[in-house]
Length: 353
Image (cartoon, rainbow, N blue to C red; front, top):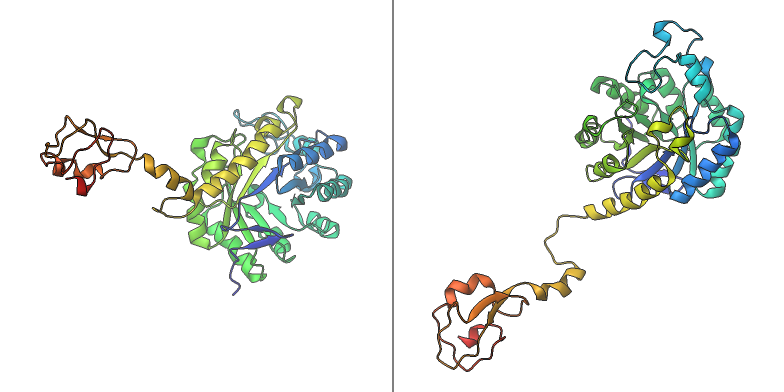
């Protein structure tokens, strides 16, 4: 059976532990029904240095039924969208399909990867005709095995958020990918709350998923700020996805938990530093440390001494720099005689005793 890959190539941008985190800006409904704004979001994302911009491909009719009954409405008091019917919410948030190509073309022009989340099989067919390079499956669809099977058959990389999924359901995904001989699976640890809190992130799950399924694992981060995203990197996250807008004050269905350009730029820059900082287990002085090593403490003579005088706490001290004997020899040389006249500021050495 197909083994899943630990290194995925998307248009010569590699995803895997040897490479820096792959950063995705999720536009979602933040275009606020303006193609001009959508293109400005692409431009801003590219200026921030992200690797990819993602949109969503659906219509209100492919998502739900046009009903206002309780089960088709949002009743959670803590939800940003309380009181909205699902149909009306998706009608407001969806990206018109005729916008996909101009958005994709702008991404290509700006040098970033374009892709989308399809929510049904017709969306997959549409995106295939468009020529997307990879796919995303949202947490709420991660149990839709027929949809995942359809996407897996494209043989393109598939990023799947794990929100609300059990281990058994995640294994169903893995087996579906393997049956279609598609080895390019990436899980995103996800807390399906909008926004989510840091305490709900449970980032240790990232390494657990990697070990359990031998796949790349990243983070779909709905928390505010960049702290949780950065914390995921030393735990093995190879992909980070954050919702993105030009300004939260502009409003929109996802604006409240989306990043603004300055924050996204900071995430891109700091995620690279966090990844570089992981390094390897090492106790060898770095090149920059070698020049500083001379300033470590060592033993020095603190008064002028005549040959034969005895070393004591009054005339020897541990100070910087580090050209004298190690401070661990302090007790060993106290009470010993110097073999010659020495000046204050002389480093203690064995031939001096």
